[in-house]
Structure formats: C-alpha cells, structure tokens
Image 1 (tube, helix red, strand yellow):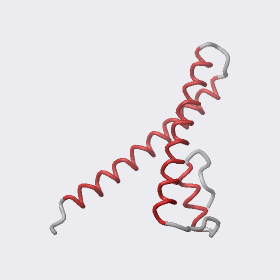
Image 2: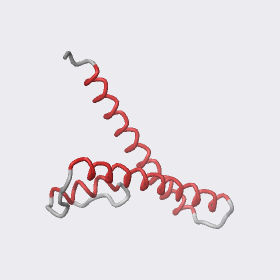
Image 3: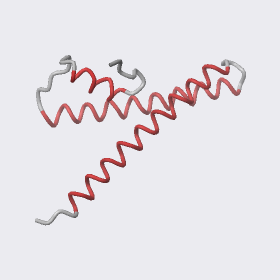
Length: 98
C-alpha cells in the first residue's frame, strides 16, 4: 500500500499499520495528529490559491494549476468527511441513554 502524500493523516495511519509510528500517550498523539492535519490542509489550500493566482497572471502553466486545484479538492473532501464523522459520533453520544 502506498500512502497518499497530499493527505497527511492517511500517510500517518498507513505508517502505523506498518509499525513505523509508535503511540506513547493517547491524548497528546491525537491532538498533535489533528493539529498537524489541520496545518497540512491549510497549507495545501493556500498553495493551491497561490498557484491559481499565478496561473491567472500567466506565470504558471495549466498543468500545475490543475494539479493544485485537484490537490485542494481532495483536501477539502477529506476535511469534510472527517467533520461529518465527528459530528455523527457527537450526535450518537448525545442520543445515548445514561
């Protein structure tokens, strides 16, 4: 299995299944993974925005603009999927009887 380089959490999970990532503390590792994923997503979106602006100005070729937009689209789809899963889990917890 080859991890997708543009999506940071997927590559980290793939590394965990291969035994390269070690878990030391539960909350700190999840927190750092979530913050690194958010930073990576923001970085990808900003890079796509800059590449698109350069393409409009005629300083970037069409292929790099399409690649940047595709990368941004995959990033946004991943962020939305994670958000939906978190909201679903939150709603499930809220509807549990105590």
